[in-house]
Amino acid sequence: MSSGDRQLREPFRVHVLFDAPVKCPVSELFDGAAGRFPGLDWDLNAAGRPEIDSEAVTFAVDAGADEPVRGMTKIAGVPGPCPASWREALATSQMSFPNAAEVVARHTDHLSITVAAPRLDTSLAARFDAARRATCLGAVLAQLPQASAVYFPSSELLVRPAQWDVAAETAMRGEVPILEWIGLNATTFQWDGLLPEPITVATLGMAAFTGHEIVMPKVRLPMFEAAEWVGVSVRMLMESDHVFRDGDTLGFEGGDKPIRLRHVSEGQLGMRTPAWALFHDASLLDDVVHCGIPRERRVAQAGDDIMIGDWNALKKKLYCFVAGGY
Image (cartoon, rainbow, N blue to C red; front, top):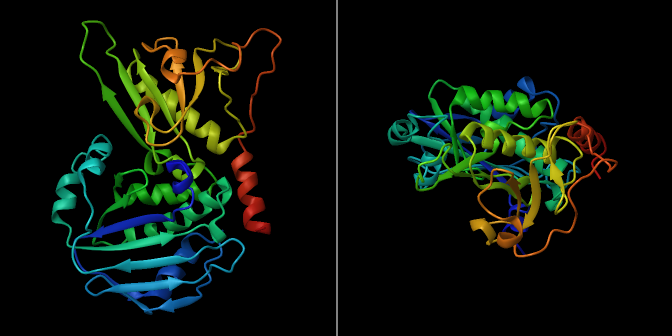
């Protein structure tokens, strides 16, 4: 089983950091979610402790595992700061949350929310729904005055409380909150005197939804342009009905197709999961050499089928999933 397959079976976790203790009934958290995000079923099938208390060992459960569209939800915590290793999260969050290190250093309490997909369903709709449930519950806690940050470990991102609220609203619209759910790691190389400097941009966290990450390896493009290509690819795979195929080309409708899509295995191009690699015309790497296999498809030519995609595909999948379950 690949790392991507394992991630598709893991629950989503949200850690909310606080600068002061938090104590409330579990039912109050779910009532808050029902009031703010009424589009989902927030019935509480409670087990474990009836109260959340960041100063005590907390373990409360919504045992929705037998429901068609609700996996088990757990709210857990132990006294003190969140016992995470923050190095990677602080690096990934540096641009969006520059004072994250200060916030992490001063927080005194935390609570963790874990939501599993029902019956280990690995479909995109089931994974997305589990992530948005965790996000919405986290947003209810994040609106408390003592909340200082939200940590989403699948993407190694630390997020401001107000921005996590935006993520919940975005997810409830059936759209991917990319800035909060999907981390972007940028690797620079020794400057060779030419501009723009070569850069590799890769996602962190998309594998939890699709089993794959996206990487644009060693390309001579401005950072914002490389990140834009990667972000558009995330949306294509998660929000539309696009299907990436090894050897296909990617570009703007009616324009050039500067991207060669290649499927890479775990370990290739330094990736920890299977990934889709975007080899741009400005890439300094040869896709055949570095992927180790010939292209399965030729470059798109006039008269070939061009996939436009249905950008409402994810919304439709979520509607069917929530309305009909299995």
